[in-house]
Image (cartoon, rainbow, N blue to C red; front, side, top):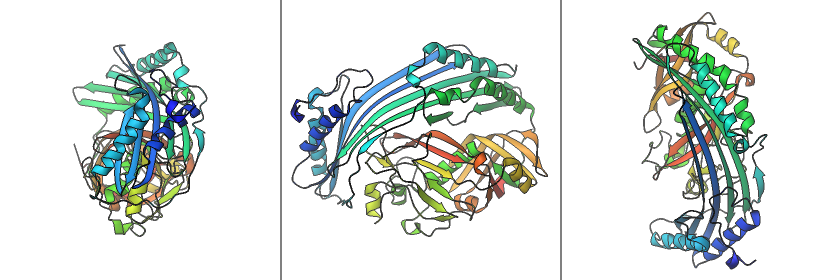
Length: 504
């Protein structure tokens, strides 16, 4: 079949872009339409995504939603200026068989409209082609509705046992994508991504106030690259009973104090600490001053890369999109760069940043392969992949013993950080007093704050690999706003001289 004879899918069902030859024909048609005078680069992304989300509450009402979309995005570099256009392949707005050519022609027109405003030159890159998919034990979309609903009801019932628990929400989510990529340098790629996740939150209330506990993470639960086996492995109903009990216990727990103290921070809270004070701060577009509309720039300067003291020698932070089972995992980023593990902070020194080809070229470096987009309708921008703090040695009890007196805290309750990613404060759902290395009273209302380099410079030790946990989470960035999906992880971390009690 010739490229001109190819026709895009029009149905709304899943699987329209599972066919490699069909997707290849669409991409080649689009690439052919970008061959104009002055073109130095073009890439095409075909993405089909299907998502399922369902939630239930103590009232028993079920909120179940599913979404499906497929489209084509074309990006071109003409006379040094970028152009981009995206067109749906399904739905009422789809132009049908004209979609590939239409997207390409609109992209070229937008590049010519910006000609002379700025000039971008990409360094050469070897083509990379292949097919990759997330290993899945059981397709989450093949699970019967009755099984999903029963799991949620059991979790809600278990968390609702204490009388003080006033509300419980439980949810499940699944997403699958076919992502096809082709560019004028010769790369041809197909990735099949599958995600599965769950969330549970119990809220207790009385005359003293309101307390909340979450599982497996307070920040939208947790989602992994994998199948239904990840959800069943969470043991949601049995963990729900603990979550409900802890929410009720917090109502009568003493208030956490204010002052300065040693703190061991658990993996769930460390995941958000890494995201806000490292991941966002070392995105190269923020460092170069591009990303100012949503969530700010960075306190890191372009000249700092390679030499800035970011933390103590106990702090080594890596970006590893090859890490199996986590949400920031892929074989190629959204502009076709192969996934490679990179050390961002090496024993406290900033060595690498999160970048796209374009931002890296402007800084005179190679991309770190962190260009991501929220589907076919958006331009790729630097997002975190799997960014985590490397484990040290020893168990959590050994780390608490090393701390002596202080606090063990985990699970985020609230957070705030300035638009340079410098001054921050976090509140946690739970805290335990630690005396002589032993965990004691449960405390409520714990919070801590600081400045990014001082906080990371005060890290004394990190527990070993056996205590490491990874969390998948969403992240908003850009104008128009995009959602990126990534992973952060850590083992419990001992930080000295932390300012605590910074908020009510």
